[in-house]
Length: 381
Image (cartoon, rainbow, N blue to C red; front, side):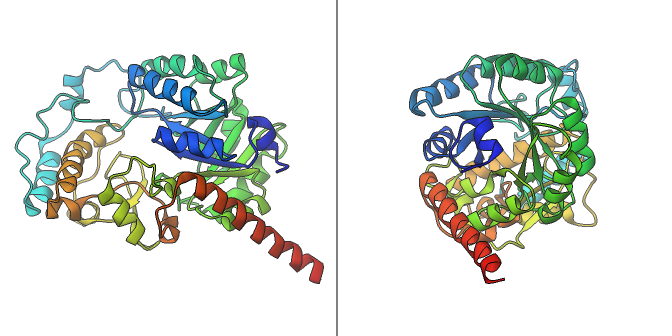
């Protein structure tokens, strides 16, 4: 396809796939798009293993890495010790989550006693020091894109991008954010509407994409990707008609056959409608969209406590949710009910589990059908 983003990234089809699964990264890139590995939850050692595996299996196709380095969060400089951070979590919040789990017959006695980071991946929010370590690992591999999910990328990321000729991307939720990113030197703006899974703003994709396009059209060589609820080729065509050079997708890969998503969550996502998601601060301290469950309902109740700022809220939510996920996989009914995961409103269009490669091909076919339909409208006129 003829698109600036294809030329910039060296890809055939302007479809970017954010995923935590290295298999999906490889399959999307080999099918003509670009897989981007969500890496913030990995240690430097884990990331090295993942990227080496991708290098060995991606047949030389381009791929990217995505981090979460928030512009503002508690302990951004990493000066506080794990003990200091844990002490900032009030007991009443722990009691609140324990009560939710207890109502679903889950024992909560030792959930908060484990050391930070134990029991699986954490929330993945990096301070400046941790981000530098991860970036050094990422740029030691032949990556074709580096992205930051929250706020303006740290200066070190921008400098490494320029040094290694690797485009730097950033997610934005408003035209004001887009201008700041463009002024900072970001190469690719991901205009993520409120329909998106995970962290998202308040403006819909249909409004945000043309707003961002208009706001940065005078900045040379800045590409715009549409994002937020996009799970089909026709939505991709719509985004590009509004000014985007391609699309950034995430939720649609959660139900693919290769995805690391648990079977319990896959079942929930495949059965969900577009109205069964909720946008809440309860998981990370910033608004993020996830599949609705009794866990999310409890946090939306009028009597629920206020969430802590990022990243402290994750210390409240992640330990019990890790236990929920573990028990759900064993068949525990209460845990299966509580289980939740980040997903966008496009979940209502995700009705079957396909291979990642087939999802790419379906995007291509659906895009062409939409394009022909638009062309026909013009011809008929």
